[in-house]
Length: 197
Image (tube, rainbow, N blue to C red; front, side, top):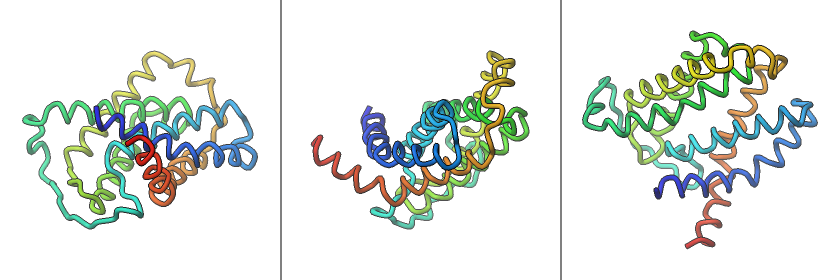
């Protein structure tokens, strides 16, 4: 429960920057309030993911080379955590094919799930958390499950909605959220924690 509460604080702190920045992006590159709002929802989801996985920030950098490169080690004994990792990335596999044409095939969505979670795990070298091959496996599986869910229930829908979304928008969103979470959000987050404690 504490992790969910903590993630909510992190999302609110990031929202202080995401909302105005996305408004600027709407004028400069998104050119549609409908698209901007959906992108903002995806940005908040990505913010929650980074908050829950312990993405590093400039205020608390610490190098810790705790790495597990042996697949499936402790995955069975930590089955609940494996399931939570899968669930965490189901929306990732759900959002991407709805918003961007490139992710409407299994190969591209699986590759992006693998790349995104690998980058997150590498970033955890700079935190107190362990970089774990099992997290890469479970998060990628979650992405693929999300893809199959959206493919199954919204096949015709995804062919129409946001058909002209640019891949550049995806990279802008992901890089912006990562930069906000690394450089800006920690300072607002610390103020919010002082207010609620």
